[in-house]
Image (cartoon, rainbow, N blue to C red; front, side, top):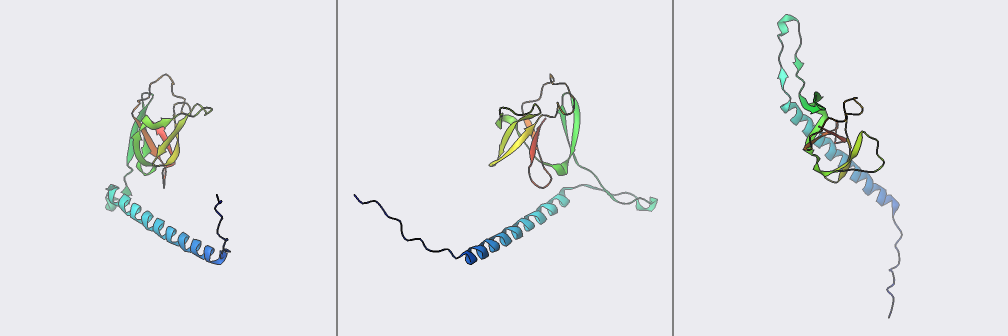
Length: 149
């Protein structure tokens, strides 16, 4: 029985590799910039605006959208621009050795995000029950972490 042998290795043309990588980076950045512009345009369309009487010496303001949630029987709010989505808490995986305010990680479409319980950092009673249904995915430009609600 013969062992398979490897074909002779060709020398790499590192100049060509670098130029292909640079072209791929440029294309990726262009696609990301276009996606960012699209998301900003969609955000502008969804954002409610409040017109203020300019004749009274006031300027036009943008109303702030909020996501309101309950934690330890108290109401809290986050600006909508920091909320990416709201997901089911069922898929939170606890990790050993985490600090008390970190509950574990959540798999959001292949990206592992930390999950936080804000009752400890906010000095709220720990015996208050957290609803087992939802977590808020937070981040400014992309999902960065979840908080339990």
